[in-house]
Length: 260
Image (tube, rainbow, N blue to C red; front, side, top):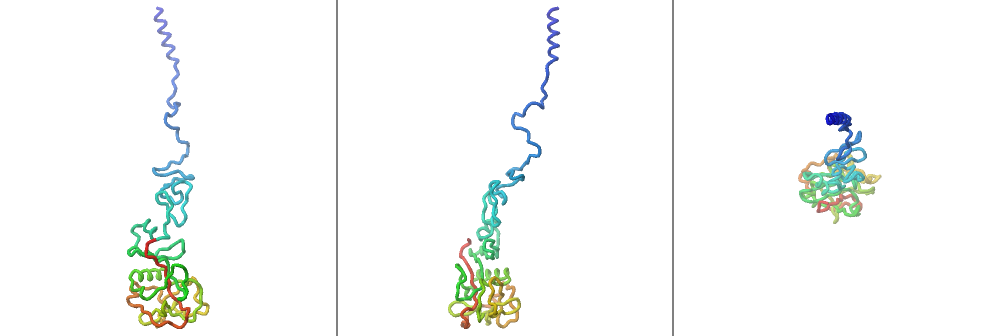
């Protein structure tokens, strides 16, 4: 009888055991995410409340504190020049074709000849006897025999709708001159600056800096606002005796025989 009493007591005691619910057991690996937590995808980082790929984001390049300048792009987490050099253009677009590109650092157009490996930084108009700035060389008629140069000249000319004057200056004559006492002569006609549809031969206000001047031949009524690709083939340039005015206009170009 005594053994049965202890067995009944043990069974009653077991009924008083309190179980701990599973939900109350702490996570053994990591805490649950707080409400509204930003969940970024693979390769992204949470930066100032948004997800960014710091390898390609111009706003968060390499980290959440580095923003690329307007002339740069983020390449593999580093801010890299994007448009001010021909090599940069090819870096971002290996298939970029020969042609005119805008240089945001200088504010002028450049021609990238990827085929020949030449950079034409600018073309401008200024008096023939004064170099406008370091790096400019005067344009000779023999330059147009080079197919690369002719393409660059026509490309820049058409993109800009003419050639800008480097600075304001006055001239009593207007034949486009070159060094050595010679003037440009295309298809038997002198070349003059033009504004719109008129020849601008020694305007009283001078050749205004920054204004774009078109190409006009002596025996034509209208200035050429767009040059066809074969312009210099149809109008072969030569050089003839210099006009009398010492401050005749000339074309000047910056050209580098490297893609940089």
